[in-house]
Amino acid sequence: LPRKAKATGHELPSPALASAGKGKATKSVTLHLPQPHPRQFDLLSSFEPGVRFVVGACGTKFGKTYGCSIWLVEQAWTNKNSFNWWVAPSYAQSKIAYDLVLALLPQGTFVEYKADLRIQLIQPDGSLHSRIEFKSADDPSKLRGYAVNAFVLDEAAIMQEAAFVSVMTTVTQTRGIGLIISTPKGRGWFFDVYNRGEKFEDDGVTPRFDEKHKDPFPEWMAIRMPTWTNPHVQLDAVREAKNNLPEDVFRQEFAAQFLDDTAGVFRGVSNCLDVTQSTFSNPQPGHRYSVGVDLARLRDYSVITVIDRQTKRLVYMERFNQISWEVQYHRIIRVARQYPGTLTIDSTGIGDPIVQTIQNSGVTVTPYKIGGSASKQQLIEKLRVGIESRQISFPRNRDTLILVNELKVYQYSFTDSGIIKYEAPSGKHDDCVISLALAYMGADSPDWSYRSWNQRSI
Ligand SMILES: Nc1ncnc2c1ncn2[C@@H]1O[C@H](COP(=O)(O)OP(=O)(O)O)[C@@H](O)[C@H]1O
Ligand SMILES: [Mg+2]
Image 1: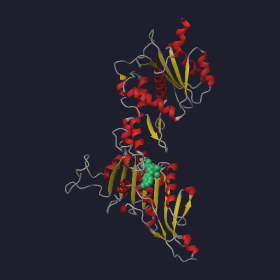
Image 2: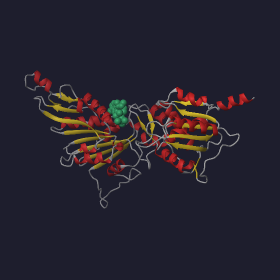
Image 3: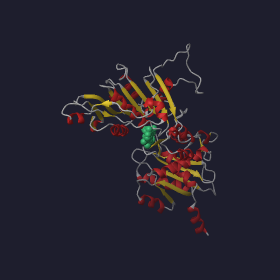
Image 4: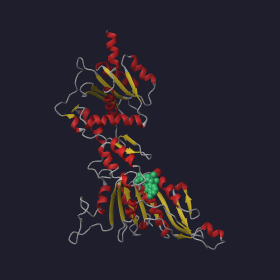
């Protein structure tokens, strides 16, 4: 079917029709699959004779999940007694594919086991035709010990390499085949596996192998496709992404490029480090400051960051994991009084009384709720621009090195609805990042406290 780039039918007598005919299967059911778009067709037709593994590095919304679901259904439909696997990074992502596959199958040709995301294609007499199972890659040890004929590894780059290794063991005996597909994420194991299938040099035309230099991976084929080759994606949406996203993010997520580094959110962090300075600066007469505060929640740190409003230089920072409210409160007020100006605090999950208490001590507080993804995006984007354009600078010391590390590993992901989401990698902190972002945002907003202070003194 994909080879001809058009929907065709395969004949498999349906059990429902068979029972209507009192045990005699007289009619056959035709499987109508959606037409792959031209680049999906290229991907699926990479299974030339001798090729067992096709690696696809494709932009977000290229149609990876959609295209591979067509392919896996075809495998299960045409190969009697076959065992077919869909492996996704999480259960929730597997469920999306499960629903897609179910929608492709004609009524009466299958039995579904929704609770464990299994589908059995059945013969008219009720006997098993083939199986499709949907797995999560989060526990790679559970992916061993089976004999699989065809698999899809969807969004492979965010899986552990162990998941890939486990799945590969399931096709050794069967000489099974697999589609390993993902948006690139830096140059991890997925990049290595992609390279097994890449038969050309970077120019795209010079063959890497010849009679003298034999291809060490003849069973592998690779293909790379940007998002905009999917005709079902609006080009306007791609243009908008190009205008709004960090350049590296766009290159990785939409152009499907393998970047040296996982595209971080903040580029050029080291350029902001002033290696000639190791100490913080005392408050200067006449200078106004912006204090950013991220309060400790359960296991985190509280971080107070102070930026000079004029020079955008980080002049002070404090990081502590005393989560008693009393301690946090006193430290915040002390710093805010020392460095007069504005104070911006992440007020997500903290009550108005807390903001009020700080306010009552004479410090002007701007609460900023970063719970919502839009407000967080705004906050982080602003800091990103500040760092990329080298507006911000920090001295180099123990505290700022923690900050620099948090900035360097800070990452983004996309939600299923395509919205960008910023966060620290799992197990890492982002308190310094948030505190700095709040201080930076505050430094760019009007200095209300200065005005009222000025008016009072007149
Ligand atoms: N061959 C196709 N025909 C119609 N729509 C398609 C096709 N391929 C992809 N799409 C649509 O394109 C969008 C992105 O597809 P999806 O498979 O979710 O992308 P990816 O997994 O690469 O992020 C979806 O809305 C999907 O329905
Ligand atoms: Mg997908």
